[in-house]
Amino acid sequence: MAEKVAKTVFISADMEGVSSLAASEEVSKGESDYEEFCKLMTGDVNAAVEGALEAGAGRVVVRDAHATARNILPAELHPRAELIRGWTGRPLSMMDGIDEGFDLVLFVGYHSGPGLEGGTLAHAMSGKFHEIHLNDRPASEAYLNALTAGYYKVPVGFISGDDVCCQQAQELIPGIETAVVKYGRGQAVHSLPLEEARQRIREGASRAVKNPDCFKLLGQGNEKFSLSLSYRRMKDAIRAGNYPGARQKNYLVEFSSQDYLEVLTFLHFVS
Image 1: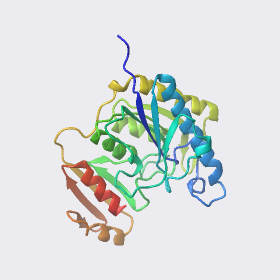
Image 2: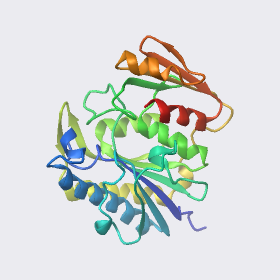
Image 3: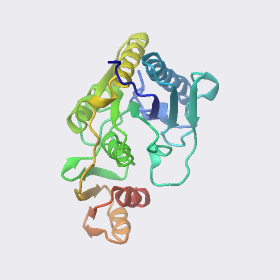
């Protein structure tokens, strides 16, 4: 019997986990290093697109999901990839564009959640948070976005980034394929040769696309989603505490719902 292949693939691409990238100046529009790393981001994304197409995908949609959402270079993107640029203002954020029509999600250039030593530019959603937990689990962007994919009945099968990001993703997203492209060393990184990093991305994306049924949908069932945000500044916590249904005490703000989209909407307004 022929193996099932993911025919429609959604790629959410961040920047901090891109091959060789190490510093905030390299991910910030207007800084002198930024343009060079936009090219590297586009190259990492192309490697994932190539892997998906080689495995049998027929349609690949890329969501530029970093900062302005205008980082990937359209003229250098793989000619068969569709590109979503800019923000719509909707709470799906880094997953804006996902729907039930996709078979699989791939994450490229991701980073770990805050508070992990070695995580390259580690954070979640914004720099406002010291920590984020969802149902008592560390809520990295990969985990939050995998739950968004699950909301639309689409599994996540692959992630690329540094070693800390990939290890955290394996703990939070069962069975996910990973491509470690660099190793965090405090505020430095130990990078693989660029072609080797890209080859890891191609091969990992290909394996995932060939085996979409191996990956578990997250957020299914009747579970309640309980979000806990630890802010860095008191004024941000107080402001977030005014959101309907939120509970604030000192730097901590909590919000719960049976509907994951309500959780995303809350995050959209308080990040």
